[in-house]
Image (cartoon, rainbow, N blue to C red):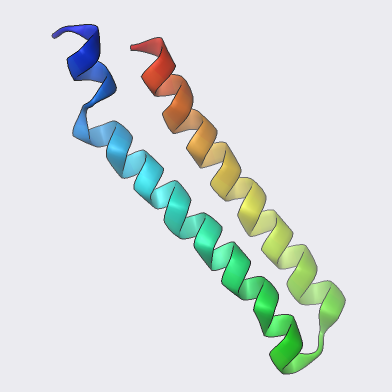
Length: 67
């Protein structure tokens, strides 16, 4: 398998899709603060979710660079 095929494999696209979904959930979770008014709780949880999304995205990007 060539490096181009490895970089374009479906597994890497799945990893990046999961990272986008997790990041989007983190962003929308932050807006719950305006609806319910528990600022510190929703902000902290949303930041943690966003960091998890960033780590997953970095895993996908480094898999592409490694190929």
